[in-house]
Length: 541
View (cartoon, rainbow, N blue to C red):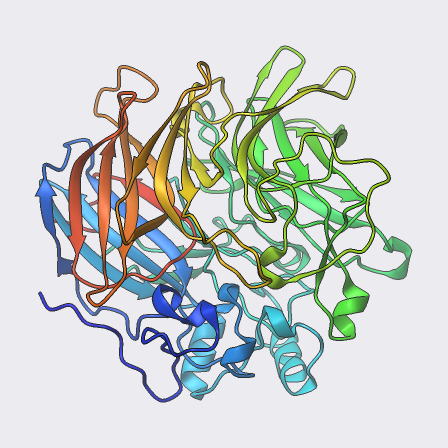
């Protein structure tokens, strides 16, 4: 099968030759030129385990045309969602890639031009704002695909994927999920209303963030959404968070509650236990007045601290907040669990975030140094554990769990919200740790963390290879929590760019390569992945 780079076309973006001035459009961040009309057969080196019979899928940005205000204004989060998927099973593998056909994508494709601005231009630009506002209040009034405060930018549906109750969701931080068919075309079925249980008010009022969790006990999908702009002057300084539960069998929402919070913070991830929904409120704060004046949307408030919140999964009390007394941030949750009144929360924590260039530098500082710093640099995270007393609402301990900085964690999902022993993450490639405003890190090793013994083992991908998000797949009849495999999408740059799906056996202390699926084309860097277990009658091998 020939391997080729995408070619530039009129109205498109392509920076694989390294000449693009915007790093988010250069090298392996550059988009691929087209979808695939049919699956590509992939050679497999080694033996594909019988336990792996399903679909590996990863979402990520892939702009289908040049940004409205030029390539220099493009932000990595602006790209249209494209799903790269590998169908696995019976010793065979095929690859396909398809766009998530959001409303914004289809409207731009029909018009032949870019209709929306991106994250670097969310201040009012009237020639974009007015037409999009009219669309939202007329064509989309019953079911807008993004919250009331998102108008001239689009729901790209590029952040993550979640499979639950036979439904594959494509997720976006500031909007509602789209549903995709699990078939070789990854057909976009449209905006998901959870079998009619989401109303017009739900679509207008908030979002459905990228990291909902599935409870292994009840099989519910627990989600969280937040808004960044208060409604009405009497609400100034207060915004809201919404949490809810989706039933696996009916596909409908069975519980929902909304509560006020006193600062508009970005809350990218959420954790659960059998009784609680756990929130992470870090000092990355949205500033509407600065946005209106054309400034950056967020501030990292160095004089403030991160607090952990929780509400009961059933009941109306709370939220309850416990301050960590640490000026820090955590984009990604590893897991959480309870032991009596003790709540244990594991995250990937950094001392500060620049939100990939979307954050205004804060001049204020704390009068006393922050407790328990990571000391690895801005936007460089490390595996961290907070133990919190829910009876006294106080922090018990704050502990670094691994010296090697890493992010994009995963676990055996059968232990979500439960006491567990093993976690997995990816380690930063030396020299790519963010230093300047728009720097995007890459990763070149996989870590296995034994949280009971404190031992971390490392699997290096090898020269010229990098990776991103990873996912755990259990063995057919697992004998232990770590009896299974990691699926690792690996990128190979250079003169012959392509990708591999690495299957790692992680059942022993030393991780070993089980097999490698050779994807015969380049796969750009992206965000989060998902594994959809078989059998899949809609996608035969």
